[in-house]
Picture 1 (cartoon, rainbow, N blue to C red):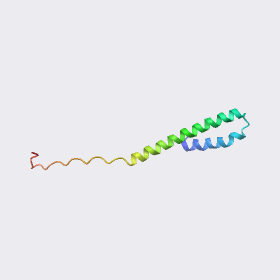
Picture 2 (picture 1 turned 120 degrees about the vertical axis):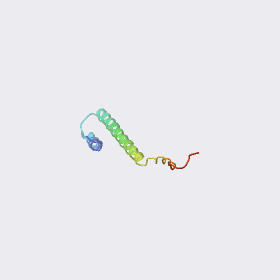
Picture 3 (picture 1 turned 135 degrees about the vertical axis):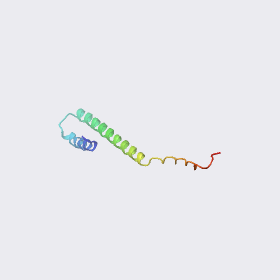
Picture 4 (picture 1 turned 90 degrees about the vertical axis):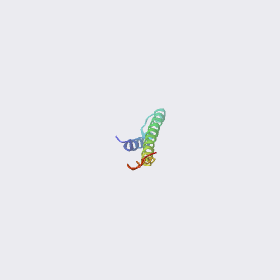
Amino acid sequence: MSRTSTLILLGILVILAPYSGLPITFRNLLAVIFGACVLGIGLSMRAREARAAQASVEAPSAPEPVAPPQGISPI
C-alpha cells in the first residue's frame, strides 16, 4: 500500500473513530496512534521530496583541466 493510500485510510479511520462505539479511553488511544502514523508518513514524504529536490539541484562539478598541446614544454 502506498503512502498516500495509507494517509487516506488513516483519515477515514479518524473520521469514523467517534462513531465506533468504543469507550472514550480506546478512542483517545486510537486518536494518538492514528496521529502518530500520519505524522510519521508525512515526515517521510517530506524527507523524500527534500532529497529529490536536492538531487536535482546538485552542485556543478569542477571543470576538467585542459591538457597542454603536445609540442609545448610544460616548463
